Length: 111
Length: 119
Image (cartoon, chains in turn cyan, red):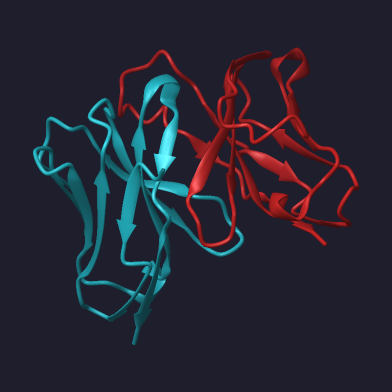
């Protein structure tokens, strides 16, 4: 049973375009929703995170949109750059700082 | 500040053999987590240590997996005997808790992972 569903599995975006990755969750007890970015050969690194009482959080070119009633959240990457090419994981935090991850999205930003 | 260190980075073993993975968390982080990603799937929680104590081991697949954290510093994850389905990338993460949510300090910091291939 997958508690956090992530889509798409892969995404190709042109340089300067907007990358959008979506996640949906079931467990209403989740209290924190981070996004992790992983480059090849590296571990996942925290990119941006949001609490469920906030509908949007923006950090530079990265924005999380959160819809509590729909139990959905998404990552928007504005002005996507080739250096943004990586695997992105959404996650949701349950008790004990335990994270439940989505399956990941491989983003490729082409010139 | 040194990050979370894991080794080996890659291990290839035969089915039935034993492998031990090691994780050195960030110094001062009492919380240590093991996660695993089987190819193409989600990163799944295995277990959580607080210092040397197992706080939550609900994600451990079966009794072929043994995790230890003697002295509350580094941790090892032993797989014995290894099966084909154990192949994947094993991530270790650590965090410092007791701080406000989203302060940044209690966020999980992951190591680069240990890739296990069982043939």
